[in-house]
Length: 169
Image 1 (cartoon, helix red, strand yellow):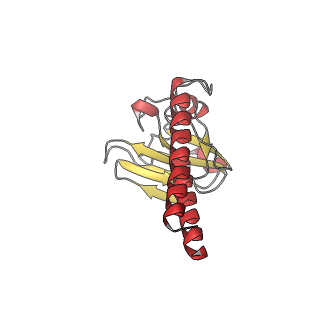
Image 2 (cartoon, one colour):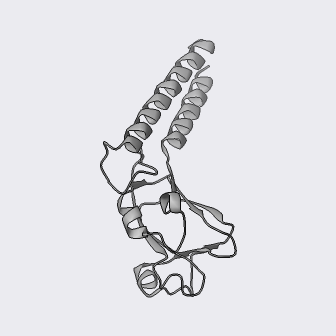
């Protein structure tokens, strides 16, 4: 019986953690394009461990290269990438805190500003996906995301209570 209780609690914890993660479409509605101001976009976001970056672009026109450090980022040195993607809908899970660097792998695009620096905070507090360039947590997007996370957490807790009662705790 005790074994079942722990399984339910682990299941609820995993679901809740996944629900707290946010997806950030890099560049917002413009996506991964040369005309996007990625510095402004990134400064309006809050990235947490577990969040995902989604790079949307025309496959064949652009690509995504994850760079190893700030030096490679500043000089657009694409010679030793940590990862390269080219599907047009690439997803990167932010699995550790710190600064992560991305650039377009198409010749000349990085030098023209098609690169982004992402600073990931540790912790699992809700992030603010797709917010405007303002970093205010009172923005409609942040409020909506926060309300959605609270609603999901309440639902997960209710599910745990119901599951626990079904297994006769």
